Length: 144
Image 1 (cartoon, rainbow, N blue to C red):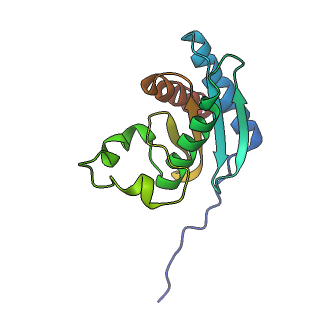
Image 2: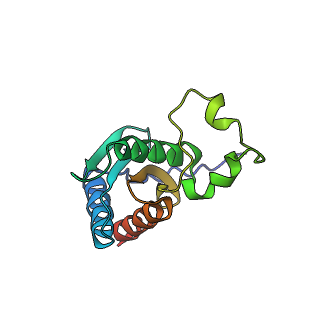
């Protein structure tokens, strides 16, 4: 009896991909008149690209990175997780139970290729819905 395992290699998120995501996110944010920070992490959670606009609030650098990390670790857009950590939500204790830089505010999204998680993108600086929109636009741009 043999078992078949899918061993098809998936191209990892590259530096060029990360730069495309940063550029596309910044273009979307600039069109809306919002100064942002953009963080791109690879599948291992390592920083591939980071950019903070000169006018972006300083904390946006930290929030963009934490949003990306959260989206990567939970393989879900942070916008989809907000209600889960509210006091009556099933994961309400998750933010304090782990000693990890999680942030449950919209603006972080996982990046997939061929159905596999290859990294994450986080945007900070605008309203949460704006940051999510900028991230989604960047992901569409990467997909081509």
